[in-house]
Image (cartoon, rainbow, N blue to C red; front, top):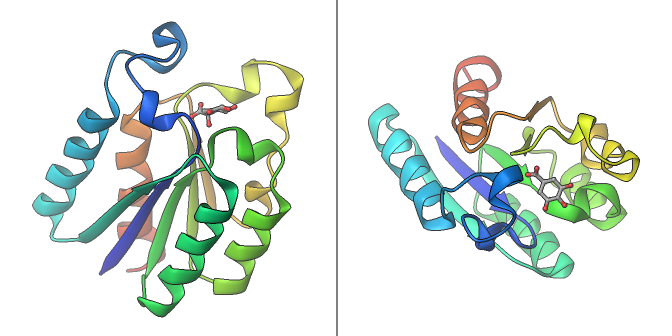
Amino acid sequence: MRLLVLNGPNLNMLGIREPDIYGADTYEGLLNLIKDHCAEIGVDVECKQSNHEGDLVDYIQQAYFDKVDGIVINPGAYTHTSIAILDALKAVKIPVVEVHISHVDEREEFRQVSYVSLVACKKIIGRGINGYIDAIDHLVNCVLK
Ligand code: DQA
């Protein structure tokens, strides 16, 4: 089983960026957490991050050609604005779980809009970086089984 974990803008700044909201763990720490967990459960995972909307669209399209089975995505601020990311996810028809480190539903009103939610089979919010592990486990145990 092959999974893609995709992070959008500013998620490479984890640990530096608003730690009161996003926690003290770094992006590298997140990558290690994901890689260790996937090694344990025998899943092939690739993690990608970009600050650019078009790159995220390219990575989603590439997942189709790479025959990726599932996508975990935290599109960062593009969650609330990007029809292009939504359309790319619709195009590839790969099961998607949406993750947000913070509790977006309890923050500013503009963070409560999510285009990706229209296609995601599950949304995990407010669980910190453990949300990515929950998302992987959901794909592996519930969606792709
Ligand atoms: C985020 C929430 C978004 O509103 C914000 O723009 C981010 C991170 C989260 O993980 O909580 O960049 O997706």
